[in-house]
Amino acid sequence: MSPILVSFLWIVLGFVLLVKGGDYLVKGSVSIARKAHLSSMVIGMTVIGFGTSAPEMLVSLNAAMAGSSGIALGNVVGSNIANIALILGVTGLLYTCATDKHTLSVDLPFMVLACVLLAVVGMTGSIGRITGIIGVLTLVAFIVWQIRTSREKGEDKETEEEKTIYPLWLSILMVVLSIAAMIVGANILVDGAKNVAAALGVSERVIGLTVVAVGTSLPELFASVMSAKRGETDLAIGNIIGSVSFNVFFVVGVSSAICPIEGSDVGFLYDYLLMVVLALLLWFFLFTHRTLERWEGGLLLLVYVGYIAHMVWTA
Image (cartoon, rainbow, N blue to C red):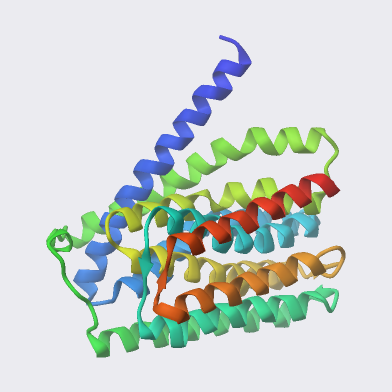
């Protein structure tokens, strides 16, 4: 069997794992939300958002420990740009995504704050251990507060489809296996492209911001699209808010706490600015009428296509 055919079969397998993993991840997560009396947004920000960010965590941690700070930081910044512009762009283009007051007044501002802080600290040139530890503790405190608030409000709504509640052990197993399947699928898809980019002599920053970032963001993409398809737009938006916040406070936090990230200002100014602008733009879109319209999703996607084209051209 030719190497090209083998690569094609691996790509198909990775795609199947991502699609089916995203579908069962949503089912298991919704069931956990009902069992724990938590809102879909909180589940999206925690279970789904953090679970689908596991590839970013592994890639950035390994890169930081190997001294490849360009890939470690580029992966996070590039993933955040991809999460907002590519993932919500595609999801919003396919499905109109609605949200609520709490998301607009608390969750989105927290995500925007995370992006701004990463840009400000990153431009100092170094992200040290103390900064990383503070970031991790900030995220933990925010999650605890979110869970308590969600339970006190009892803000869950139930539709016909949501009435399907699995036993807790089965729901957790579905989530764990789904996330594992999506991570494997993403790795299968990204490996070939990463090797090609490296062989062409592309810089670590460009590889981290494009190939690695998109590859590690594939679980978020399929999780959000499948959530929106099943009518769980809170999960779709919460997944992205949770992923972006997790990337900044936990992925960068843990990576820098273990191995300080040096040179965080080298070549990243444009990328930091775009990340912050996209976060603010998403907040503005949702703030105007509490929904992400299809034309707005299309605009976000267009921005991402332009960004990738610029990266490839300058590389």
